[in-house]
Length: 407
Image 1 (cartoon, helix red, strand yellow):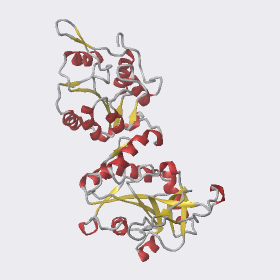
Image 2 (cartoon, helix red, strand yellow):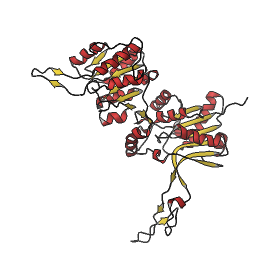
Image 3 (cartoon, helix red, strand yellow):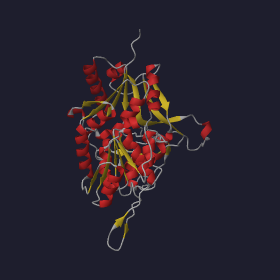
């Protein structure tokens, strides 16, 4: 019986970054970059093991939460001048010492390419695992004409040189030999060959062509902003199901209301809620999911609504993230298994704490950028009913479900 090949994906993720502070923990589509890389590798059919090499405890925790092993990278190979290859070799040794087996194929996967796909990872893996390539890399087709500036004598701008073409001849795109841009996202190497050469390229190298629309490397804050803007377009639409979460925590104003307040002549405040949200919350309660309303507003209407819905409430809270963490600890709930729905910037600390940050459709742009999922329905118009539909199915089919009068 043939022993299955071991394909080890190594994700280098240092804590220090000059261009973007804490870059590898920066969120795109509501998920830290290091976690995105882990999830892509875990989703690859041919990858058997995923290791994150890091010198940072927070990155290690995020890697483990996403399902990877974390290997502590010593300071000698964690500086600005340390190569990615040194981190991969160290991780290979640590993996062998821990598991008692050697990798057949090793991958170098970069966190800074947020739109890498599992299919891309399988593509480079297959080229090496199935041969005849010794190394492989992700590329994007390029049809650009490259130029190099050449400086002339003083006062002369020089004569620009065509790098991949003769500037006197302008061939049609379809008449040119195809060229490929290295994306910097994923590399695959025969493990023993990599140990011998100590470099990601040796022997026969295969290029794996990927979607050029997904090529983006995050090196500075502008790259990060672009990635966050592109995430709703390039990420697959994913919404959680009941198996993904152990608790649901809901903001109130702007999430269960339309964020408007009516005030009478005596200063009494009134808000508008949606009956569909009451139905969704009742369904979630009956399904056994722990629920909590968490609000910074010290307003009797919040407590009154919670009593009506028969779920606990914490309101008048200055630090919602601290209150949420304490509630999770007291109820034995892993924050990474919590869905938190919010709409404004005071919800962002809670977004960074939970595994499923969800923004309502009319949330602040910064909140939607940090969310892992965004409802199609605005707050106060049935957004919570929509979330309940994600978890329980569009018909909210749960045992003994009957609408609560005046929900």
